[in-house]
Length: 586
Image 1 (spheres, rainbow, N blue to C red):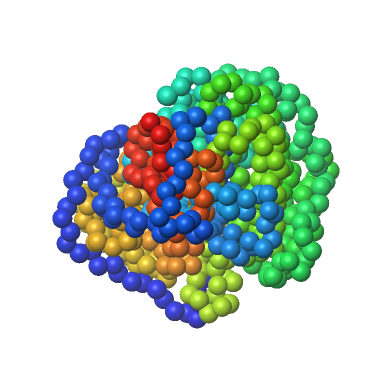
Image 2 (cartoon, rainbow, N blue to C red; image 1 turned 45 degrees about the vertical axis):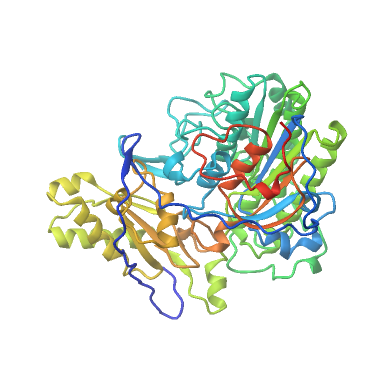
C-alpha cells in the first residue's frame, strides 16, 4: 500500500435516516430501488446560436448510416488540453458542426463494461446488470467476466476462459440499436472493437459484434452470433494485417515540442518490451508474430490502425447504409484506454494516442463523405469513462493518493471477522473491485446475522488508508443510504445478484483492483470528475450545432433514440436533451 506523508484517510460516512426504498425482484436477487434522479438543469443556449431564432425543423427522412464512436478512457478535458493539435476534419469538425456537451456519469463504477452498457441502454447498472468488469458468480462459486457465457465459443480460439467476454446474455433490457432492429428487421448493426466487451455491449442483443483475438491476430466473434464469420471477414483476416505490421515502431505523431509533459516518467508501466519512452518497439521481444505480439499491439497505434481498417471492411462487406434502410456501425476504440492504463493521462504516449485517434476519425469521415450525401449520415461520439492521474505522480504534487492492495483488504476483513466470531476460515470469497464478497458458508457456520457481518467487515476496512467509506449489501438492497451524491452513485451501480456484501468507496486519487496491484500506471472506477466527465457530440441534420454545458450521460441514449425516431431503450433513465434537437416534422 502506498500513501503520502504517512497520513491516513479513514472517514466514516454518516448513514442518515432516509425513507426506505422498496426492493424489486430480478434474476437471483432483488434490485434495490435507486435514489431518485434530480431534475437535470436546462442546458444553456448554445454558443453561436442566435437567441430567439427558431431552429429549422428536421425532415422525416431517416439517415442511411448511424456511426457511433466510443473512445475508451477519454476524459472531457482531452479536447480542451489538446484542441490546438486536433485536425480540422476530425473530432474538431464534429464539435464545431455538431451539438456538443460534457456528459457526466452518475454512477460510481466507471469501468469499461458499465460505461458501454450505460451508453447503449441509457440505464444504470442496477437495471442493466452490468456493474463491474468481473464479478463473483454465487451460483457457480467462482469469479468470472461479467460477459462470460459458457454456452458459446470464440471462433478460432481454444477453450473459453472465465476471463473471456463472449456474449451479451448478462445485459438486461434493450439498447438503442436493438430498438433500431426492432423498428426495421432489415436494418443491420455491426460493432467493432479490440476489446470484446466494447463490441458486445455496443452491438446489443441483435447486432453483430467483432473483436480482436490476442491468440490469432485476427478479428473474431463468438458462436452467440453465428457458427462462423462471414466471407468478408475471412477475406479480411486472410490479409494478415497484424502480421504485416510486425516490427513497426511507435514514434510521436508530432514534434516532441508539442508534448508538454515529461516522457521519461518512472511511474509509467512497461509491457512486453514497449518501454517507457519514445520510440517504442512493438514486437513484444518476439522474432515473429504470435500471441505476445498480438497482445502488445492493442496498446499502440498499430491496434487502432487494425480496428479502423476492419471497420471500413465492415462498411463494404455488409453494405452498411447502401440498402435503403438505416444501418448502424459502432466503433469502440480500445487503444486510448490501454495506453492510458500503462502511461497515464498526462503522458506523451496517451496524448499521442488521442491525436492518432483524431486523425483516424478524420480519415473515416472523409471516406464516409464520399459515400453519403449531406443529411444521410449521423455521427455520435462519446466515451465510457475517464482516468485518474498516476497516484505516485499525484503524490509528487503533494496530493494524498495511492494504491490499495487486495491483500490488505482481504487480510483486514479476515482478521476482523475471525476475531469477532472466534471462527477461523476463508471469510473472503472474492475481491472484484469495488465489491468484497463474503463467504455464505462462513456466515452460516458462525450462525451470524449477515447484516452484522457486513458491518463488522465494513468498519474494519475503514482503517485502511485510502478507503473513504463503504456501503453494505443490506443497506443498498433496502435503500438505507444517506441523501448524498456518493450514495446515489453507488446504489445506481449495484446489482444484488452480482454485487458484493461490501462496496468500497475510495478517496480521490486512490484505487484498488487489477491496477492497484501494479507498481506503475493508473486506473479509473470512481465517481470523481476525472473519471465521470466525458465528451458528447452529435453530428447530423437532426441536431442544433452549439455547446450545451454539462448533461447527464444517461441522456445520451435518449437523445440519440429521439433523433432517430426510435423508442427509447427499455430501461432508459435519461431524457432527450431537447435544445440539442431540431424540431421534428410529423
